[in-house]
Image (cartoon, rainbow, N blue to C red; front, top):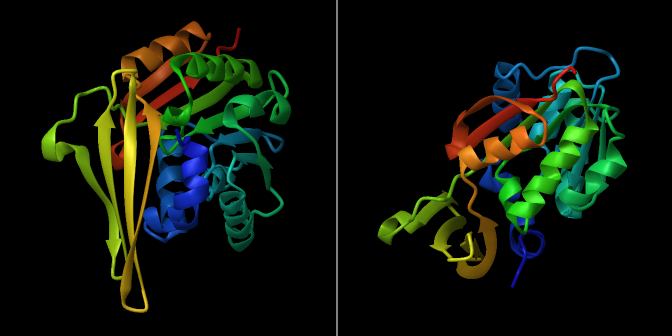
Length: 255
């Protein structure tokens, strides 16, 4: 079975910024506004943040705009990490951004010492790329350990626990003159949904179809909130957000 990182490396990474609308800085502004509205911002010059599953960097750059002096972007795709670096240079944040190629579940102990991170984000539905609910619990525990007292955790994800039937299983992601991406979701009894991506690209007047599939976890918002509390975090916000995402915001208590 193809994993999410393998699927992105083989098929989606080269098109990810296009999937977001091509204007990465417009997405950065949207994400900065979301985080600002949750109260996420740097309070001191040395405040550090971690972006788990950074993709091409919209959350990384949003955190830079919010004043964090060091933002570590973690992703398994070198193509996407190279984009983070390029976008950071264009935006004037090259000195604040560092990239680490690593699995998001394994990265935290290596990129943030215990009790030091002012903010940790895992956004853009990356959380559902983990292999099991047990991995989600492990990530929450490691996040709680890495955060300093008062530090923020922000997760965005799609709640795919509802049964999808018929035409509701098909999602047009984006289409332009020479490119079309459609997504088809197939619920599986093991608590996952299989994501089937159909990417049409046109070159020299000829269309080419590329198809790939990978599993995503079906995570319920209430379940995730409960697991965050069990990890010792205080959930402040759990509601619908932009682009069809659910948003969970939690802080590490000051005791």
